[in-house]
Image (cartoon, rainbow over all chains, first blue to last red; front, side, top):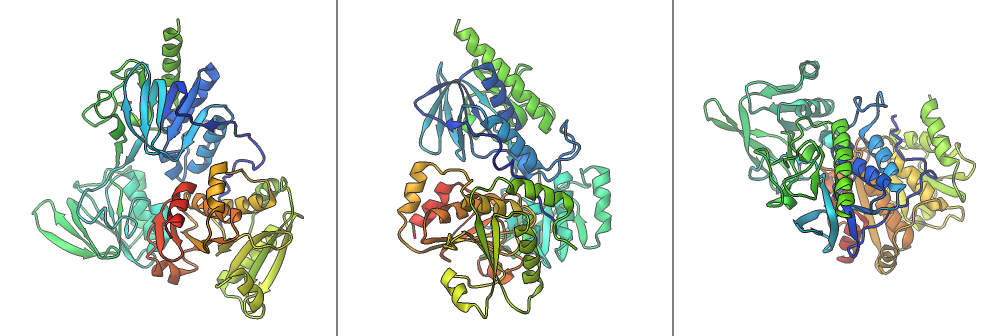
Length: 328
Length: 213
């Protein structure tokens, strides 16, 4: 039996963070809680600026990752363990910290006002937008209604619940291939539905699919509808080559089609590129002075944990320079 | 074969060395153990031996019916974490807390022992105001890294109010319940069999649902 222990030492590491205060004006207010946001927090606090952070969750995509082998210093570490280490390092500081709350909109000004879903408005002289990416949805009928009732995005969590059942995995990249493999171990059949004519996953990963006789792949197909009353009962797939459609009976639909930047709260605030990512220069400056951005939500060309962390540090130093200059 | 390898054993012993007050684990099984009960039995035998502040009491679900009823134990295998007087805390585990759930088990032991984190004052007040019998069931799978957070939150709420019970329910051990509540995404939280939501949400989200009962 396996045991994945990932609690920071139960008596170690003091939590010195304070609740985020809507009446305080932070020098730097960080929106987000993944590797860029958390690294930015450490850098800002070490520079001695008054720092606050608000995020829906801590860890972001790293927390969903089972195995990380390319973050320097760790030959192998589980995503959630790495997140705990980041969090511990941040919470030793007396900074404003609010977890579990999403920012909904931002009003630009010499003091920026960030409205959040808890009804409060938090204030920062500068902002660091580090909200990362989220899993893309298919946007087909039935997807929203059946979320949590057979429509899922996390195979590693939910795979055991589909033992002996028929499932489909939508997508053809690394996430989709990994999901198909995780599911094939206990599901009856796994059908991958891939939009393009071939998989885009790394060759080495895709080769592992051959080890499972219950995985099949439908190329050039797309899901057009997900059906079911109280839970998923089937999907309609369309053959993109000839336009024909048919129904497949399945009890689970795993959607693994990539990621989209979380920029909804920032519409109209800063310039975005054609992918909806926040445009930044190499100092992590956005199109608005005093607003910085870092990590996967930006136009940085590669999305990796170590890159996000590096960008967070840069954004923090830029923001601190801005604050210190404004004070002169 | 021992259930904990040397590496895990060492990590657990280190984490348990800081326990404040003694705790008790009440384990409910029966004479003819099915694989789930016997795995759980092995688990808690080994776990409780790692600290002299943890006492294990084993009860027979059939023969010790009165004790099971007293604590509201309705299925096995079941573990209940209490202080050393055996007063019900409402903190229960149905199924072996393996995989990532070892963390919620450690948190429960820690919290009952008095070494846990404090909840914010206004949350504690809100929890203590709850005047109905509440049963929170948190359905999990052992491979889900988000589940322990939901379990720990539910248990923490139960600890503050004697009318609230919170259960970790391992979905494959209790498949009939996972099917009954249509569990296809975890963690899935079911409250008094009627209110439900999915995801490791903060304390306030749990309380909102409880207050609507």
